[in-house]
Length: 134
Image 1: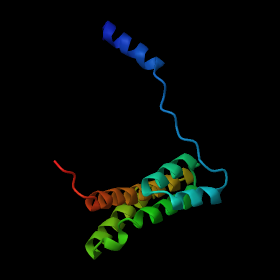
Image 2 (image 1 turned 45 degrees about the vertical axis):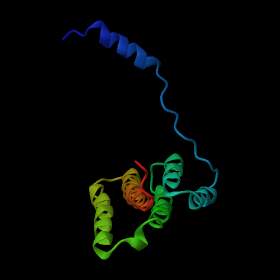
Image 3 (image 1 turned 30 degrees about the horizontal axis):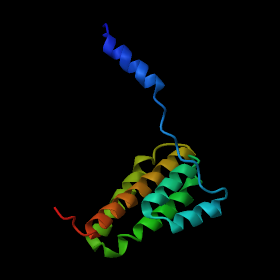
């Protein structure tokens, strides 16, 4: 199969494109990271956790802090069926990686649970914000 000159130009342009810069961890110690996360919003706490993660079981402490921060935005307002649905989604994260070996899969499951909490937080904050004038 032959590719035309358009594909060659696209490949050339993409080869010079700068990759998106990953954020550096904003703190040096674990305590400083957790303190920064507590003072941040849910979304910012997730960004900090992602920037400071090591891809191993140590990430569980970071993601637990994200869950706690995000749950503050919605958990108290959920009715019992909604809390059950939320817990099912978090449990699905654990099941997804339960048959895998290695500490990175513990990190994957932990970040999956934190992302569920982040989604619920985003929905709750969106619902709570006043509707924009049309």
